[in-house]
Image 1 (cartoon, rainbow over the protein chains, first blue to last red):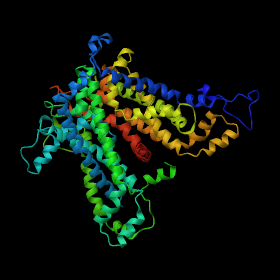
Image 2: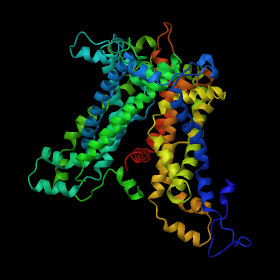
Image 3: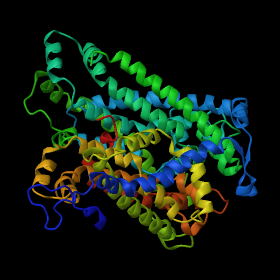
Image 4: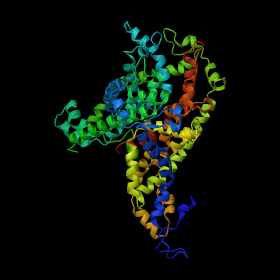
Length: 313
Length: 296
C-alpha cells in the first residue's frame, strides 16, 4: 500500500523539495478503488459479459473451448418454447408467491408482538432469528428427518392430534413444494421481524397518542398509522425476499433435488441442473438471463406500485 | 446511519417515560409473553431435535414417541464425526481458511473503495460506480456458470481459491461502506488537508476509526455468508479434501446408505457453533449489519 501515500496537495506546510508537485488527485482515487476494482472486474464484470455471450452459443464442457458454436438466439427461442422452463416458472411463482408474502406477514405480526414489553424480549428475538443465520445444510438435513413420512416428528405430532392419511412430504409430488414453503417461512420470519422491529423504532409515537385520545381502536391505529409507516419496509422485504427465494437452490438441491419427478424443480434449480448436471452451459445461461429479466421486471413493478402508494411520505 | 441511530435500533428500552398505552401493555406483558414463548419453543424444536438426536443411537433417533432427553446421552457421534474416518475437521479448517480470507479481503478492499467512491473526487469515478450499481442487481447464481468455466481454465476449480477470490472483492460490501462514508462530514478532511495530511493519512487516521461499527458489521455478515455458503462449493468443489463444512455435512450415511441421523446431526451441531457464538456475542452488530444492507 506504500504507493498510496503519494503526496497530496499541501498548502500550509509544503514538504521540502516537493513544493510545486501536486499529487494528482485522480491517481489517489484510482489507487483507493484499484484493489476492489481489479477483483470485481475479474470475477464479476468479465463473467457477466461471458454469460451474455455464452447464452448465444451451444457448448458443453466435454468439447473444450474450441467446441463453442454460435447459434444466434436459438437458446432463447428454445427456452421460451420449453415446457420444463414454464413448469419451473409456475413452481417458482407458487414457491415465492406463497412463502414471501406469508414470511413478511408473519414477520410483521411477530415484530408488533415483540415491540411490546414482553418478558425476555431479547432472548425471544434471538430465538426467532436463529433459523435465518444457521446454514441451509444443517437446517435442511434436520427438516428432512423431521418430515420423514413414517417416523418423523412432524407426522408424529400431527398423528397425536388424531390426523390420519398423513402427507409423505418430500416423497410426495403434491406435498414436497408445500413442505419447502414451510421451511422457507420458518427460516425467514425472524429476519423479516428484525427488519420490521428496526423500522418500528421510527414509528411516529406522537401520532399514536393523538389517535388514542381521539378514541381510535387498535385496529384503526394499525391501519391508519402503523401499516402506512411500515409500507416502505414491507416493499423492501418483499423485494429482497422475492429475489432471494427465486435464486436460492440450496434447499431444493439438498431436500428434493427437484423431485419427486419435477414437482419441486423451481427455476434456480432447473438452471443449476442444466448447467452443472447436464453441462449445457449456453442453455443454462439463456435460462438465467430470461429469469433475470423476469425478476427484474417484477421487482421494478413492485417498487413502482409502492411509489404510487407512498406519495404521502 | 449515525452511531446514535445504530444503538437505538436494537435497544430494548427506548422510551422511559410511560404513556398510558405503555402502562397498559406493561400489565399485559404476560398476556403477550406466554403465547410468544410457546411459539418460540416451537421455533426452537428443530434445533432441540438436532441436539437430542446427535446424542442418541441411530435406532433411537426415530423412536415413537419421541424422546427429547436421550437416556443415556451418548457422545459417540461427536467422537465419530470429529475423529472418525469421515472427520469433518479438515472441512472445518477449510471453512475457517475461506472465511478468514474472505472477511479480511472484503473488509479491506470494500472499505478503501467505498471511501474513495464517497469522499474522493477523481475522473471516471461516477462511471465506475454506475458499473458497480448495474452489477449489483445481477443474481450471483447467473455468475456461477462463467465462474465455473473460468476456474476450470485457470486450474482454480476444485481449490479453495475458487471460493475465496470472488468473495474478497464484492460490490455489496463496497456499497455498504460507501453509504457510511457518504454520511460523514467532509469538513474533517478539509481541515486535515490544510494541516498537510495526505489522502492516505486522512483515510487511515480520520475516517477509518469512525467506521469501526460498520466495518465490524460488514465483517460479521461476510463471515456468516462465507461459513454457510453451500451453493458455491457445490458447484466449484468436487474433491472431499477441499470440501468446506456445508459439503462435508451431507456425507454421513448409515448401513442402508440413507442419511445417518445421529452422525449428521452431530456434525450439524458442530458446524453451527461458530456462527452461533458470533451471533450471540455480537447480536446487536449483527442486526445493525442486516438493517444496513437494507434501505437505510
